[in-house]
Amino acid sequence: MGDAARLEELVQDLQGRDGAYSLMREHLEAARVYLVGSMPREYEFSLKLVEELLPDIGDKTVHDRIDNLLGRQK
Image (cartoon, one colour):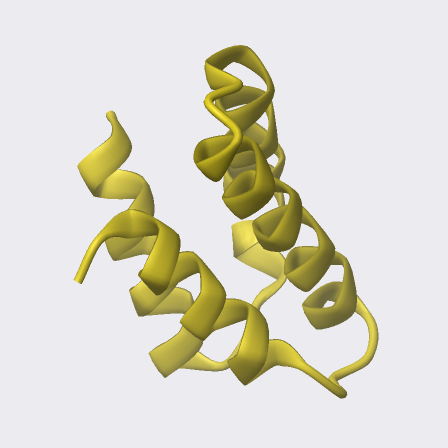
């Protein structure tokens, strides 16, 4: 599974959640759009926003999946 598919899966998993989860969904959705649209600077910026928000995600499973995605990008 590629990163675009992983991003889409995470966006779907965060659908309907409030607070930090909603903001995280927006950042992940933007990152996916930028990745697919070949906009590397915007993609990297979105991932930076995702990384900054990651400590606010309390669901360990979701947190670990996002952290894993970020680890592949570095």
